[in-house]
Length: 124
Image (cartoon, rainbow, N blue to C red; front, side, top):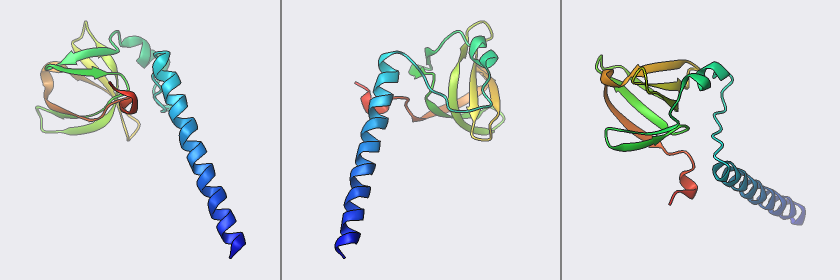
């Protein structure tokens, strides 16, 4: 029984330390303006096409790395991570959880909802 409790305490301490290191890593990325999009289907070309990493859409401040849900005028719904916006084309790029990079024209978006803000743990 004592051995079992010792193992549980060690696992608890390990998980707490792991959580602390993940939080510190995210804090480091935010401090250095690094946005981590962990998806192997997002290419450097996709990142280079976007010229706005932080912008306002319908009065809402969006930032690359935010998780959003987009509903188009065709009643199609997409959920994914925002890569950025292309100002010349008046569009946004989104990587979905089906590993597709999609471009949406702003005038084709009927509504959108922020599911999760990037770095919300440290938001002011």
